[in-house]
Every structure is written in structure tokens, then in C-alpha cells.
Image 1: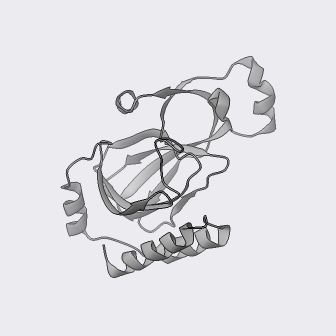
Image 2: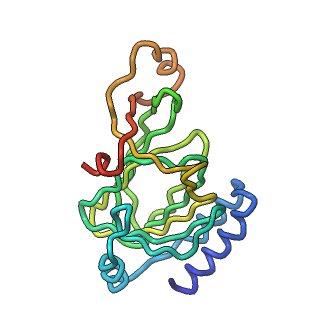
Image 3: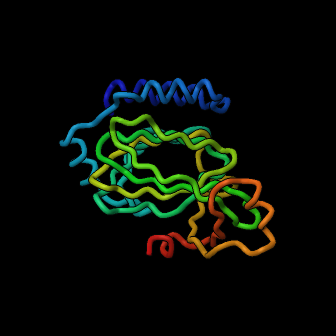
Length: 200
């Protein structure tokens, strides 16, 4: 971790203790502009062993209120559709390009989600911000070898805030037509699946 990245992580962690305000998120995003890693660092990170969750991750710090790590994914690899329950997340691409396909909960209890715009992010783009409300799910696919910094506040908790994986199960039934007319975006029904099934 570079000194600049260490400074940003420390500031993000300090503000995470009470929950990130909109102002804190904006300040963190602004501080990550210009953060990059070089080709040697990309190669080093892609050489890391694959963690239990199936990807290469270097963790900087983690506790229930905050987590900071760098992910490295090879070209064509996809982190499957997953959620961030009650978490705020800031992701900054440090090298390469990724495609993020996102959904927002329309009715989480019914596993009904609304498709959001797909975005392509590179190392010259601002950080992607995912706020805890309304709740966002997404996939991340590396268009080319990519490294990105992830900051979470708070962090996953297997009891209170577990990470779940999903697959699109189909279009919603007619009972949710009224929801569809109130909000833009295509609605889909999701199915909770295991990590192994999500990766297939």
C-alpha cells in the first residue's frame, strides 16, 4: 500500500466509526482521484493466491465497522451477483477497466429488484459509490486485468449482515405491476444461490 493509499484508508476508517455521511463519502471519493498502481503491482496482486471467496484480495484492515482491501481480477473474470446488506461501499479502480452491472431492491422481501444502468469504470474514473439504501446488488467483470480498492462501512457480519449471492430467476409476476409503474427500470425476480452456483 502506498503512503497516499494508507492515508486515504486511515481517513475512511476514522469517519466510518459513526457511519459515513454524504459529506464524508464525497470527501473520500475526492481523495481517491488519481490513485493508481503500476504494472508491477498489478502483476504482483494477480499472483496472489485465490482466497476462499474465489478471488485475489489483499486486506489492509478489517473489523465490524470498517474494511479496506484491494481486489485483483484477471481479464474475463466475474465477481458474481451479490449484495452489500446495510453497507456503504466505495470502489476505486486503480488499474484496468471493469464492467459493473447493478440492481436496486424494489422489494427485498420478495427478491424483486430493478435493473440499473451498466457502467464501465477505468482508472481515470471517479470511485463507484454504493449506499446502503435502497440496497444495491451487482456483478463486476474485468474487461482487462483490473485492480480496485474497496472500502466498506460497516463490514459484513455472518450473523447480522451476511453476503448473499443471486441469480436472475425471471420476470416478476403480475402482483408487482403497480411497483413497476411507480419506478423506472426493468424488474426482475432474483433467487438466492450458493457461492458455487453463483459462479457457474
